[in-house]
Length: 403
Image 1 (cartoon, rainbow, N blue to C red):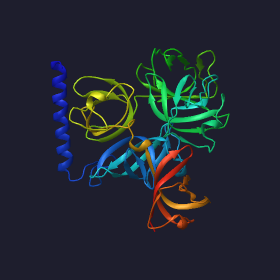
Image 2 (spheres, one colour):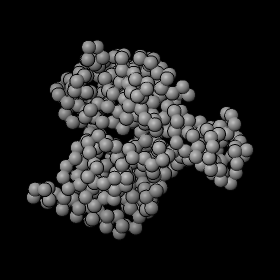
Image 3 (cartoon, rainbow, N blue to C red):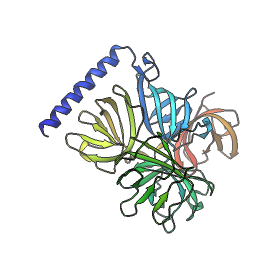
Image 4 (cartoon, rainbow, N blue to C red):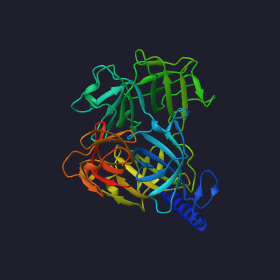
């Protein structure tokens, strides 16, 4: 490690210690909405929704009753628009224990919306592409159709939430939804070959040239620059690898995650973009220093480009000083656990029911019922359900009756 890097690491660490002492001395942390307070540490979390009751992201239960909800285009959303597997950015506070918090704002982040490319659909492998961006479904991908991936065909319009590898123009899907055939196209990507009126996104071998034209820019005077993120909503499909934006189309250009500030607790899930020395790597465009972090399900030497990980820590000097790194690709028990808590809305069959819009199947063997039995599953009963996702439904492994 050269002297510049050593000095940078030392200053970053000292900054992190000073910020931690400041937060501790304030008796409860920093609140994004109101400065220093007693409600927990100001925080940003980015990852897929893995539970309801409170919205659960990266293992943190965010109480969301007063949160402002919107999509990443700035459009307001109703609470029932949130669904398992959606990628969201949560801004708010995290309590001292680290497992709970309060959300001030929740923003859904969609990577792709458009027709499945001809010749790209491989149902057996769970792969296809949209606008040239590769999509990979896995065992924890949430689907909105009972028929699952079998309902898809070339030309089917889908919306994809997922963990994006912006450098490879690929998405590991966390949720896939079918959309009406007249839905607006949506694509996010890292800008390259930028000029005043055009830029390129997408895979190296199949790039998408975007000609800005008269599109609505957000911010109004935003100019494309290599390395920034472009979010495009368009009304027409690309022709011969060129997407010509029209006056009714929207182009948002930004630097990635919003509202990150030094002293903020950050919980991120994404794909490693690059690895440096001394425990450093880049995730979602953010430099991470994991030299002093605890590693779950792996070792520091296991970190590699393209690996899906979850990182928590404190932002200091623009660097995320990681306290914990988890290799989320290495799930124990064959699937990621999801959780739904709420009142049974309807019963759809023997030990099958719906809570918060989530279809739940508790008919399998070995379900652990606590304070009740399968016969007690009825409309109006309050339950907490834990299980794994299989297509569009949550297959229960444990049910707690809470009333």
